[in-house]
Image 1 (cartoon, each protein chain N blue to C red):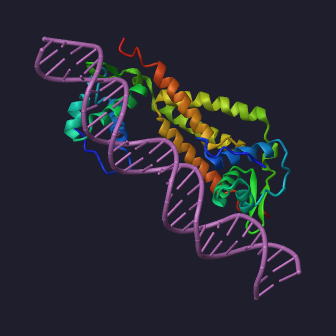
Image 2 (image 1 turned 90 degrees about the horizontal axis):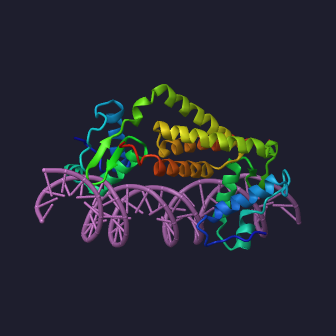
Length: 132
Length: 132
DNA sequence: TTAACTGTATTATTATTAATAGTACAGTTG
DNA sequence: CAACTGTACTATTAATAATAATACAGTTAA
């Protein structure tokens, strides 16, 4: 199903996240379609199930998939509304703002800490009831 | 001159950066005032000169000081124009934009990479003539 | 119930990166 | 040239991230 570069500098769980994102965004994997179980995929790729698990958790925290304990991981529908233009606009705005922030004297670390905080608050409190 | 916490989780070079930023922003250290040399300060604090060097380089890349090789490090004047309101506004805008970006599907890593890129381009090509 | 599947949590190991230090080099000034 | 200044390179250590091993827990159907 995948051919990963195990000795890449990019962690394999990140590679997995990217692959699945592409599949989901391009509608190759449809809403509510089940992803391969952590064990099955791990066996196919001859890596540890926990690495798959990490990738799936990342995908879940970004809203791409939802998880039902004991059943499996499934493609979420929340991403279908996203259009590319909006993504590009946000990227552009973001770069401008970072330039301004750095010029003003915020450190890269402060900015990154800010991202981490927001990331946690988003990833931690929104996916709990996705099975209802 | 300083009392640092050598066994803090916060790196001592970062502590140094913060201390000097406060001194400079609050005009305790005046424009063009010379900072202690890397060796002198290192000896006072009983740490390695290279740690001071790292802090000074960080301060330089953020525009707080400028360096003349063989002479020393001096307080820059570029930061005087910054007012707090602007900083707060940028912070607020930044948080909003990060939320939006994460919601749309950008990863925290993508955002952070973006910050790093911009940080490099700013730190590398704008501070060269700050002594003129 | 139990067997065979599913995800999860905890901990350990390994790999990678960041922080600090040691040392030698190079510019400035009197 | 002597005594100061910053710089560059490398090694060492500390911290963190990535991956793995293993045991646990929920779901489903015979």
